[in-house]
Image (cartoon, rainbow, N blue to C red; front, side, top):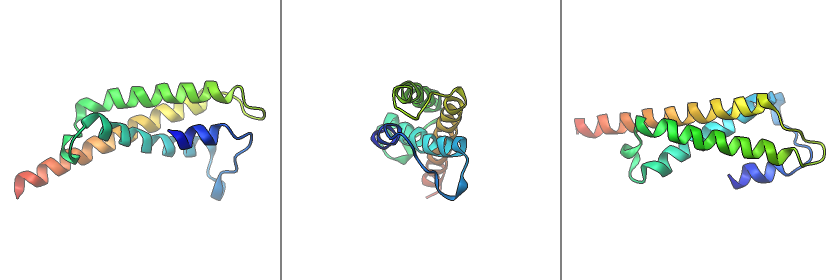
Length: 112
């Protein structure tokens, strides 16, 4: 979250390799969504469950909203509904991927 805040505070950011802005948003927030599921699970990887997807995605989307609001005060930056949508979709995707990883870990532990 600190890295996102720091990047948002800069007036211009060059995205490498010609990656579209919305892809960079979705990928960054996917990582955040996965980390939020891990944090909300509060235990080993197997504690990451489907029930944590929605709370993690909502927290990620709300952080995206606060980030877009913050950007509206930075010269050369502007808030964007498209960026917010990419943030929310990324958070949801990352949270779902983390929960799937948790299910995989639980399944593998059951086989041992």
